[in-house]
Image (cartoon, rainbow over all chains, first blue to last red; front, side, top):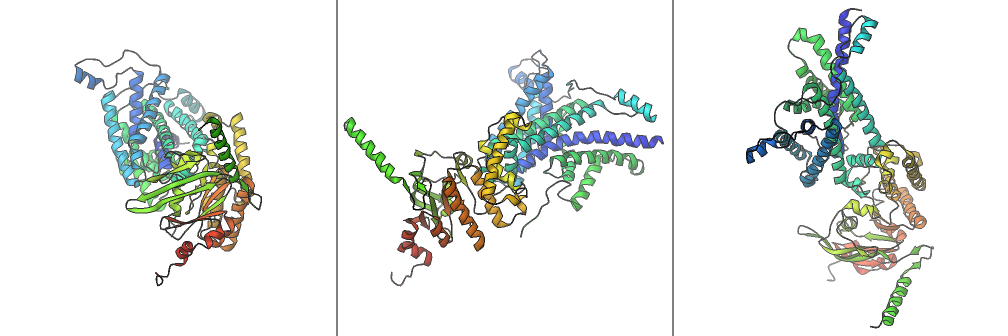
Length: 328
Length: 288
């Protein structure tokens, strides 16, 4: 087989891995959209905030250090300890749950029965607030996140494929881990929503608020739960993205890449988020591979949005979304 | 008052309470008041939806609330189920004054309801919809439920059994797995009743359970309401437009008009009440 074919296959596989990363972010959007009909613009920033908090806890950074130093004239930055990764992750999760609680208490509670656009605007505000908070708490410099996941090309895969096909496939180990973690996450979320009481309640709230109230479901408890889960998914996404490209403020922009993924997969479908992410990932890598020499420039920047535009024209509800039927 | 006097008074009260409990000619046991509405007034801005209304609901009875459009019937049901909060008045439930409650808290206290415009989970199957009625009875831990472990699986099976009983009772076996969105209107109403029943409520609130139904569907629904009351002794509060249906079904009737109570009593008594007749047929102003 010519070497170009192998190269194309390699590109496609790496595209799949990149797609998993997109899907991780999109998943958080879907969860909140399903449960409360809110498009949570802050999802990307939540991933950033989670990653920042994780690094901060791990390296024993003092939160608000700059602020404290500026006010009191002190010069402290670190507690002087390093937390084990698992403790830092649990601590970060606690912070995300607290965040979910505060969002419900301070924002959602006061906007019950408002138009979706108003809730959307509120999440934009939340995005900027969180970004600023992350900055003040942990500082603006790019940080290294190391949670002990293996990095770099998998030598084993390279060797094996070389022995089999005479071509050395380059597959990032971190990407393989991301794929595995995403699979576990999706299976876990599916089990949770199908078989647990809280999952049922969550689906009920997503479907009809009034009916959910009438069978004894507390909307507020479910919202805290949903935002906590979205916070957990953001944490996972933050870890994966942070580990691959460092924790920096451009991380919040990955939320924009999740948008075409959602349009493709449908805003209300968890499998849709995964499949949409994979299609975008593979699509943009292959498109770049074949057409970049012709059109020139980085097609990866715009391919996903173009694909989303085509979908909006022909299948606005996405691949797995619920078809919108308006009764007259 | 001496102790013996107080004791005598207590016995007397108990006897009078006992006298309240009786059995209807068709063999249903009617108990004392389970829910009391005391001087309820509900306003929306300047509009008075309910004006100083008091009535009680006795354990095991079918109590109807009737009245012309806009009389405040649905508002009254919404007060009972916690969707609205009255500006004045008290709700007494099982002998205690009820604090201001949210709808989900009322549901957890054993008051289930259906809605005039049907509020079902359209995206779920009939079975899943009815299962949500059991949510407040589920206890297994979240982890055990997720992995379908021992007690959780057993608990799920028990709830499923209860739900299947309700499904059999309301004769909707054939649509068990159908998504609710695909059902015709009459069946949706029946599924909504099934979901309310699955919660094993102490009081069942039905907001126009027969609105928009044809004669045959109405007869079916009437039969179900009577059977539920007969079989499980469920206290039922029912809003209905169709006078004939109300007269056949209910033990006692409250009549509302423009937010006020204009009649209260057994169907035959209410039917002959002049104020009720005026409200329904309109008053001739010549004789005023």
